[in-house]
Image 1 (tube, rainbow, N blue to C red):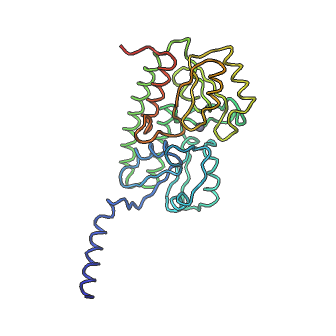
Image 2 (cartoon, rainbow, N blue to C red):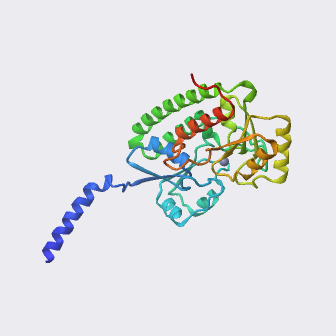
Length: 304
Ligand SMILES: [Zn+2]
């Protein structure tokens, strides 16, 4: 009996040790603050590094609260990539609980990309964190991610840089496709109005005029003053549509739409992806979806 048990356990050990690297038991663990970053990091990291996200798909990155599984994942991780510029106010709890064994890296604050100031609300004048909404901003993130991974896992550096190069090229193609699509929006209609001010970089990249009701999702959404300001603005300048985002309550934009008689369109995706079977299931799909929706709602020319 005893002998048999020993043989079984030896066999089990052999099986376990031969499959463990393929069974998801990666020794290298990297964590991203939210799914948009998780997607970009996964494109660079390759299969030997496990990448997960703190904020789950669909949830609002601005207003997240750490869960016990989050804490466990953070404790096991080597690197935590976060956006920075105030996108993740809850990060102060991570900083308080983590020791030197975790490398915390902000991709936006280290990106070679010119930040825009937030133009409205409590955070007016501080850098707008939503840089990924311009594919060139995402490309600058990719550079930070590749360099950080290469420094931390030097044996795999070649793979990181090769995948970063591929991702960079794909982002250039995406950028061009969106530009061509939005070029079809008539000059008189090129005003984008959203709830949260998350499309500043997108608007800058594609030549749209931009306005939002409030500055960042972690401030009071749709205060009476901000609503009155937007209402005043819409009375003098009427865009063909008003947009709401997937992670905000659309009641504010709906109220403005009813009052002004301007149609409501959405949701646009910015801080979160759609579910896997939805239209914005990953980074390029999200930007393509937003571009399509904006193009259509602002009366863009139909493809021939
Ligand atoms: Zn946001």
